[in-house]
Each structure stands twice: as C-alpha cells, then as structure tokens.
Image 1 (cartoon, rainbow, N blue to C red):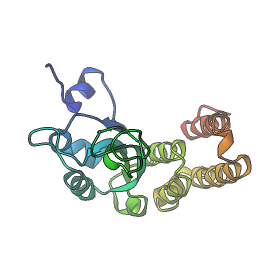
Image 2 (image 1 turned 180 degrees about the horizontal axis):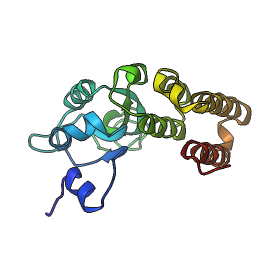
Image 3 (image 1 turned 180 degrees about the vertical axis):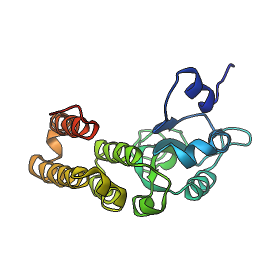
Length: 211
C-alpha cells in the first residue's frame, strides 16, 4: 500500500498549515502521531482520533498511548464523538437486548472516536499566533464547545494588537450560546446557517475584506 506522510501531503498541495486532523488507521495511531510530532507541536489545533480498547492488530496503539502523546503536545480531551459497543458473546454492535444468548446484557465499549484540542487554558503560554487562535476558535464553535472557544480568545492577550477583534469573538461566542439555549437541540440543523453567517462576517472583518 502506498502511503504519504502529512508533511509530504502538505508540501505536495502547498498547504500553508494543517489545522484539523482525523486519524483512523487501524491501530497505527501512535506511529502516525510520533512521525508527525512537529505538526502537532506547531500547527495542528484539533484532532478526531479513533481509539480501540480490544486487541485487533499486532502492536496496535491503545488509548493510554494516545492520551499520553496528546498530553505531551498540550492537547486536552473534549468528548467522544462516536462510540461503538459490542455484546461480549455475540459481538452484536450496540445491542443491550437480544433474542439470542442473554435477553439483556450491557455491551462493552470496544472502539470509538475522541475529540482533542489545544488546551484553551494554556493559549497564553503556547506558540500559536493570532491566526491560529481564530481558527481554533471557529473549530471549537463548530463542534459546540462554546465555552472552550470563549476561553481560547479570553486567554490570548495578543489580540489587543488587533483592535476590536477579541471583543468581537467573545461577543459572538456569547451570542451563539444564547441562541443554542433558545432554539434547543431539536433545531440542530437550523443552527449552522446562523452560526456561519456570523462567522463569515467576522472573518471578513478580521482579514480586512468586509467593509
């Protein structure tokens, strides 16, 4: 199988930086992360990564190895984005009730996807620039981590050089939080239209495009 490193992909496609990475490599997570350590240290802001608790592959990466790596690179665990549970006898996925073996049995957590982000409380001590902070802010908002997005901006004093940008970002995060509260989770698919309309205008202001 032909493979390429993230560094090679970045060079091939002339990418200025990589902000977001999804890792699903069937047990090779540690190798991928270690080989890309410089990008996790300097560029990558947010990660969705598969973790597996059962042994399926030779020399596979286990969750403790993944968490250890990301702690060293100043990432925090946010939440599970995807969870897969299997019954121990039938290996049936996500089923507590069954007509076979035992009628009821809690399934075992086998594998799933986790969300990790650069630590908002360590932004002031990090090597991130203002552009990266804005990008991290947007990514956190898009996943619904509004409080974390707020902290990212609140803890980044370099925004004082950008005039009103810091206050604008804080205002947007508060506004989206109130909007979420008002519409409730049942209106989930309406939400992106409101959020990204506001974020687009803010990004244009930030880049000096919008007047």
